[in-house]
Image 1 (cartoon, rainbow, N blue to C red):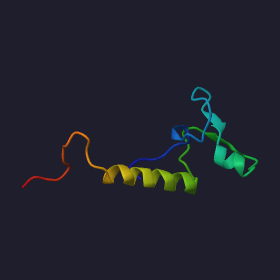
Image 2 (image 1 turned 135 degrees about the vertical axis):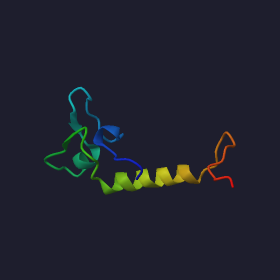
Image 3 (image 1 turned 45 degrees about the vertical axis):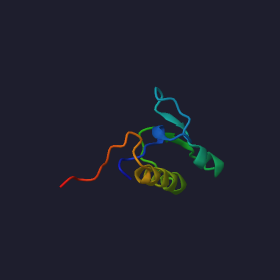
Image 4 (image 1 turned 135 degrees about the horizontal axis):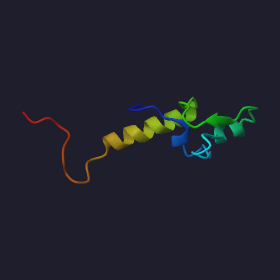
Length: 74
């Protein structure tokens, strides 16, 4: 992954940034006793991380809308 994925960056975390804590839908769905997470905690959910990697890789394989290239010129 290009950067750390934090709980507060996830659409499955519905906490308040002001409170810095909130429930994680993944953990809540598994009925974990501690499903409330700290917003600045690095994500530890394999399903979410795999989804993010696929999304990131998909963006890298798409062509540029503006027609610019990332290839090096000689």
